[in-house]
Image (cartoon, rainbow, N blue to C red; front, side, top):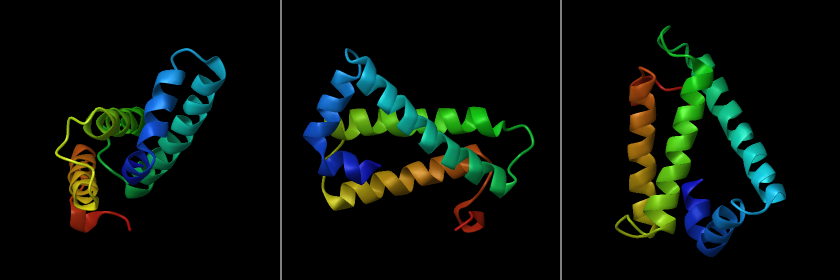
Length: 111
């Protein structure tokens, strides 16, 4: 997701802005978001995380974090850069945050 944003930066900008005024684009973004959320929810369920974590809510929150992070960090250029190492560093940090949020450590994650 992050590397796609960087690779297609101008398209990410236009797509984000267009979704605020074009209902068809907004619906397409909602469908893609739902697909990503479903994958995240399935991963959380498969990992048998903490019982106080609702997989549906957690998936929605983590997906929102990823989308907003990509928008701010790369599209709006709040991050240090858009080089491959910047994307890798962001990906690794976000993965660690996601795992910690659902009660897993990197070495216990499903691969």
